[in-house]
Image (cartoon, rainbow, N blue to C red; front, top):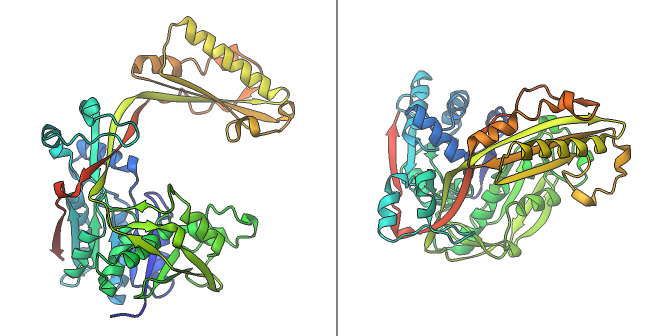
Length: 455
């Protein structure tokens, strides 16, 4: 058993810095490269892509990235965990296999595929058997929006990824898996942790949580003394340096920008946090109130003392469904009286929409520069504002009503208050709204599948 492994975060979301994974591989020794691509809305986007093209439905950025790093990963025995498979894990793996063969890696690479998270084909059968998949926020049964569902994916945990690693996979590709599982699975594999050793599983879960958003824990988006953070243009992505006892150090490669500090790690720990004593994943319940942090040197924060509890008997399901249409229009009003002009334009717009008899489920106005971020707490003398952006959004089930709204923004340029600018993009675009439906499903209903492709 190794006494230390290094897991490097390479992507915090689909669209993160494309060069970051390459720099993690080339910047110093690592054992694993962890790549997190998926968010709740991403699954519906990928489902739409696949409905138009059966070969699509995964994070296509992942394939050219693998072309860049696979030779080094094979040479240096670096393994990869990624949820880039989206709703087409097989298609993603096939594309990676093609790249590997093109690179001359035949016989040198095993791809691990984790599927079973997509329950769209089974929805009707589940509902018929009384598994209602009630909305965790409202309590409503899923049947109320059944005809509008676009995607339904279970958050799988570390177990199937662990199985793939145990079978010798160098690159593990999953669909919807927990962000934390991408880091936890390598720790369990390397150190032989039992899935019932709740403290260690919780430690691996918190390690994954700290690095799942990439550079957000190594200087990016950091409030603490942000002006002092060095060289964010060359920000280093985080690395977990873990030991068999469940303790670990958060660090980054030498000679990279950003920083790893206790405040930067704390900020990431609080990300997406509810009750800190009950951070629930498929693998365990992690108690964030037990986390202890201390410095172990420059850009090295030691994390220890973590406790966990047994996992629940349910998986969380991420479901997306269509919920009408929306459009957002903007205009910028300049000094003098910028705020007054923007307010007047909003009143004029609303009066015209009323005259047309248009009805919306919601209409929201923000005055960016005056109240959009802090509302009435802004406290700035609004008569002195050099410019204010009027931003108006509507949503409705009726697409035609939203289209009519979109036609009413441009006329304000010549038929409203003076001093307007910033209308360079044409009419606001009418977009379909994708809403989020969180639910729970018994773990007994889900059977993850693991397969291996030999390159």
